[in-house]
Length: 399
Image 1 (cartoon, rainbow, N blue to C red):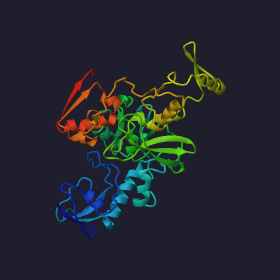
Image 2 (image 1 turned 135 degrees about the horizontal axis):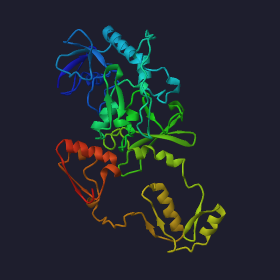
Image 3 (image 1 turned 90 degrees about the horizontal axis):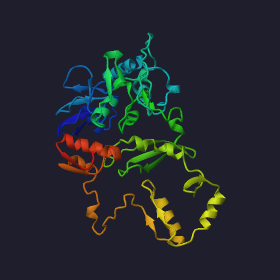
Image 4 (image 1 turned 30 degrees about the horizontal axis):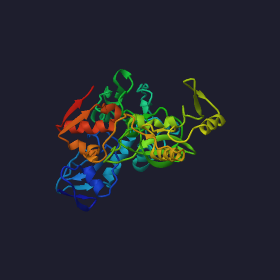
């Protein structure tokens, strides 16, 4: 393990670590836009500049520089401060001053780092670059004039989602990010680029102009849209849940979330069962609560009552339904949508013994009658990592 000095403090860093990671181990905050722990290194933004000796007499990008034995790293020198101010000034040259109407306002990396590392005022008086809006589908709202070319969205689509749908064209200042032929980003993890975007270029279209982050109450929760159990955060204002965001859990969902889980929030406010329905002549018909209670009162207690739980019903609701059925004298409960009866005498037959993160180290994977990409997109990302390491995947059933 190489030893390095960060602002005069000596420490050991893991072999293969970058200078940026060494600085973080030393407790130093390094600004960055393009660097992300789960994506490949691009070195585009140059915001993570530090002074390194021995080396050239100029700041170097810490995200792309390996940490080696005997390095002396300075993160707070006058050279570094001046270099970061210059980089920030260049990033802001073409960035529109529309923070009051930008949905990223209040949780924007560019805002935060501009205050912490930028100059107090701009010296740029020329015309700013403008970029036409791109269509990326019903989930991703684009304002590409705000784009700072960090390419996080491009790398996520290629490396994590495995779909080459987002790319860059042209060069330098005229570079633009777009989908292929400006078609919708259609893969199951597309909205994660909204979280990855450090500015307001990519924002959530359904959530547009709904709220500011400081207005929201944040509640930790678990996603129930699939069997992964992704760690999520519910942001609510008053009694209304406005959005769902992923939480970091390396053993479960890393920091990604499927589009289905992210936008299930719409089901809390739209097309909900807000009145009782009774079946008459083979069809469901809207009824009043008085009619519904009268129909319930006519039920004969006992075996004429049965409870069937759907795939997405939570444990608390099923427990309440079980208590209600028990009060009506019934023990007819069913929650197996497939109708299969599982032998529970030996749980080894149904337990997922590998763990989710352990799939990445598997030598072979057998998939039986399942379309993983549709049913559990975050499991698919683990399978991609395993395949990249040489694992073989076998499928039984329709593809």
